Length: 133
Image (cartoon, rainbow, N blue to C red; front, side, top):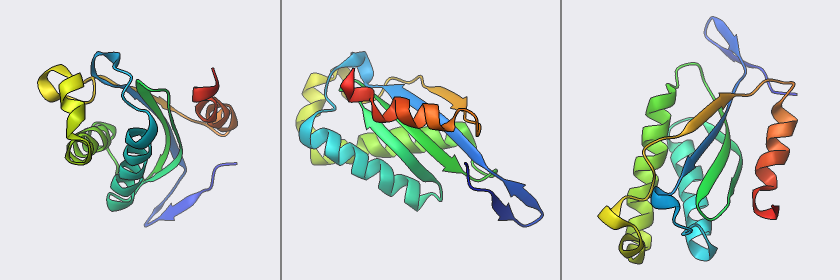
């Protein structure tokens, strides 16, 4: 069951399922790049005060289960996750730019869905099994 948190004058339990793709669906999220992008995304979440509870890639896209506060605005979270992660991964792996025309790592669009107590375990299972398809 999702943990309930208490703020100043409010109680909340907010989880989102986030998905976005690599530009041109290039299969670049493998081996060390996959390891580094996951580490970078965990760092970004910690820096901005939200928590990635589950994360998995499938070479050309990434799934996250994120827990956050009511103050977190989804478009800003996505802009931060995608923008900062792209900048940091290109610093660590400059060779990726040659595989991505125009030097963009992520497709500009994304998917977001709210996660309830009833669907949380299904979403966790789905994310964990991304590479087992």
